[in-house]
Length: 405
Image (cartoon, rainbow, N blue to C red; front, side, top):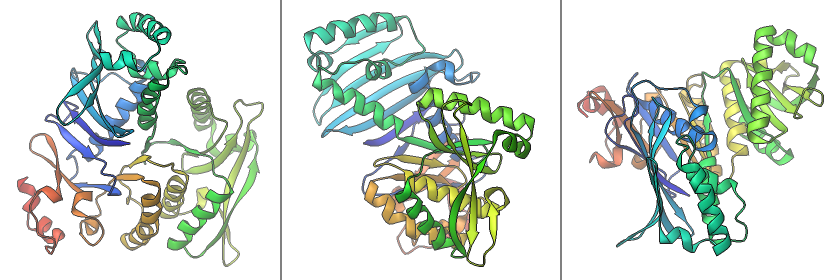
């Protein structure tokens, strides 16, 4: 699992900030004023994941961002692993990459890449068979001059099945895969498919907040219907994103939220593509298409789907999670979702401006982070501020206590 992610030199994040993923805790709730840098933390992590999976060409250039650093701490098979990287988002280059095992007294290097120089540690050689290690060195020579691809991801993609010790490299990459993002300002979002058991759990979660909903049912939609519903421009945008998604993730069944509408898609090309809209059936007999729901109802449905479909040790990042959900409804949803997250060891990371949630009755102090900016963004864990547990945190906020951080 991922223990923590450290970031520095990303836009207004200058000094190193740390997002912890303590296995005993469930949430990272980021509070703070507008423009403090809450979303930047998530953006920096999302950028890293994109580069890790698809290379520097997959992200847009960020002018003047010449030395963004990340350190990810993993706990794999009772081993503490540190993965250090430094990226130049301005020139789209990977400047530094290092993987090492850390104990209380020593560090054991797997590899270090510093510019065009690559150092192979004894730790790395020992996890390969002699034949696989020679193959690895050949791949490494090709990567030496490619500063846009991570070595660790390439190791994952190669077949080293004879080297059982090398499985740890795949596990590291798998945990980076488990970083999942939902951006409410995206026009198109993809979600994993939902089987029958997920359907039941989604419906229970939704009904805990919206008891007037009776069931969710699918209705087939043709491509012509879809073009009419979306208009030509949005329809073309959807098809472009669909092609990109099935190519990147090798999947053929998923849900998609597109311009405030919601569909279940099956197929890998237009010839085999089947599309189903979702109708919401109410206890009073009323039937509404997803696009006709209120923004709050849509948000609760999408959040419930995302949580119910999440896998063990997933880390989910959601910006402005309460933007369309009232405080009372969200707190009811939190109570229902907490045991699900705990059972699967899922970490839910959210930003919010609902300061009524800034309360120890909802979250542990270790789960609440106040993001300040003076002049750079800083993460302040409430557990590190020396605030008494019986203090009303919202009162401290209103009195200006957090303005001094």
